[in-house]
Image 1 (cartoon, rainbow, N blue to C red):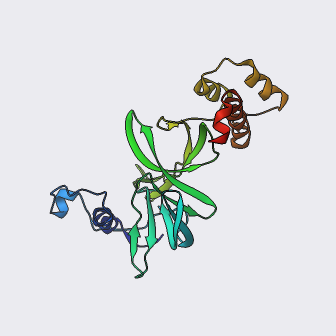
Image 2 (image 1 turned 90 degrees about the horizontal axis):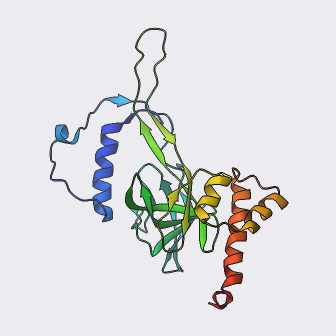
Image 3 (image 1 turned 135 degrees about the vertical axis):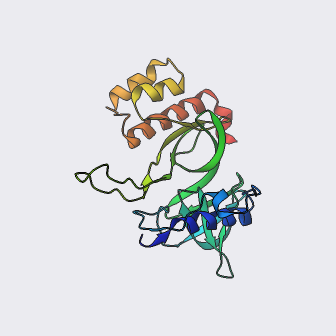
Length: 232
């Protein structure tokens, strides 16, 4: 991504988020108060999962609403949509509004981040009582100047820090590093059948596919204990 004025990028997003309905004016009116600089820099990477707009579908209250060109901004946690007038808009970040894009579903969920409750977009990887989630996320890393001539200059970069989360029904999502210990601890069960299932199927719970296999089995066990839910 070449010749981007990062100050304008920040200022544009502040305006963009306010128009979208979830930004709040801080009362700051000057560039110096905002901390905006106008130095031209070259930024590596992109804040988007894919810079190209692709055809997606908005879903409101579980029903497909309309098709639109869209892309996901993983730095600002925003789903951008091109409206019928050809203008870029931010999809409202609400739990009843979802999007399907590039084979993935983007759902707004509550989650815990550094002890605070927030809402943001997640890609659910399975259905059921317990869900494994993928949180697409990028951060901006400032440029680093070398301390001396032997070090090289590190340009400002958008770094991908996407990660897994896990969520039980009725609870906010929590960050999780995939492992046998972490997953069994979250499920909070001493049921020997889970460990037997892991051993019989030779599951490596550091792998997403194997972790999903165990979680789906766990959800099926819950359904067997509550057969009435199968018909709901």
